[in-house]
Picture (cartoon, protein in one colour):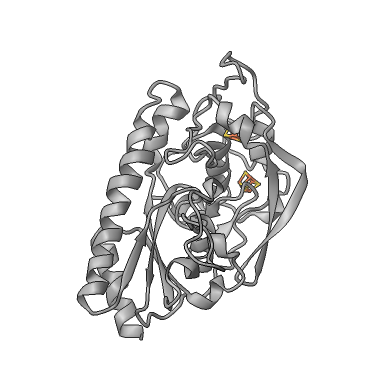
Length: 312
Ligand code: SF4
Ligand code: SF4
């Protein structure tokens, strides 16, 4: 129903959503039951994926190393638990006011499964939680990057998502095909702990699309003192890396190469990045993306160049 879908998206944007996409239920048909939204709401027809951005300035305190807590609130806890949650809840209410059941889901890490005992034969144990990065791909908002996170044309890795499962007859969005992750390996090169493998990768299939993803040692990311955060919901969940030096470097890479729609008057990285080793001691890192302008890219031909004149 295009009208209902357009109205829902307009409402979501008016209530703070930067990103809103719809994944038809069939796109989750191949997801294992312990991660499938269909295990939570078998009659669902669609998943609505709501995203709000981590503003670029929220990363400034981490980049300079002078305010490590700013990101924790505006980039992580408040953003996830209040700002995105409020938008998600308002859209949930909007759908139910029109007679469609709507199930809001927050970003509990699927790695923490299971947390209970199955209530009937054949059912997965509670608590089933879908992978939100995969859902954002299924909703046409993102592609999966080499570091296993949703990458959008608007913000790169700078956003957080929540989900609404509904039986409303919403029209699905086409899958995104933007070639955002250029496999430049800048994230691999900059990581002070060597957590991302350049050689060991695998393929993840989401709704018929395949993505090459790295083997990542999340044990190292849990010890990382370069802007990573423990998972706020469960210690076994993947740590939050969106503010870490690897992802700040990726953002600069994407900006330098004109990959992102959101542009800025000034470059983000203007000084050599600081880094700490696993013990928290200062360390030197290879800086594929330093303070000077340049592609820093192993395969610069793979990137579209920034049109300086087009910048605000
Ligand atoms: S730094 Fe390069 S390889 Fe790593 S996620 Fe970003 S675009 Fe992909
Ligand atoms: S979070 Fe830290 S340890 Fe993990 S990949 Fe990024 S920089 Fe490396």
